[in-house]
Amino acid sequence: MITTKKFKILGMHCASCAMSIDGKLEDTEGVKSALTNYAKSEVEIEYDSSKINEEKIIKTIKSAGYLASPLD
Image (cartoon, rainbow, N blue to C red; front, top):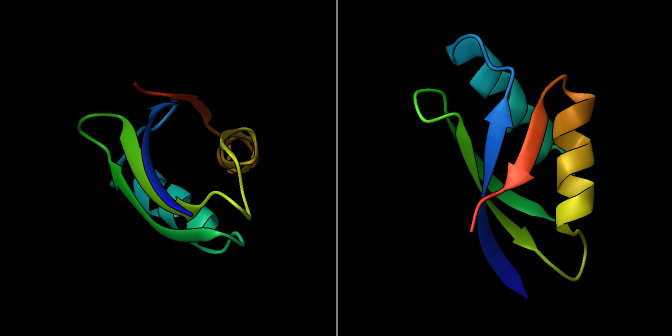
């Protein structure tokens, strides 16, 4: 099932940070797309919830060097 969810990102300092997060997420199995907005400190992710969950997404973002939490 394809799900779209936004996450708040902490620790971004520039647009390059946003590109780094997008790349890390898009290389992760189950993630269809990631669009990070540096100005809002958010990322919108489209993913297959049968292959990846929010916890794994947050861990992936953390492995890129940033903190994340889901937005409602």
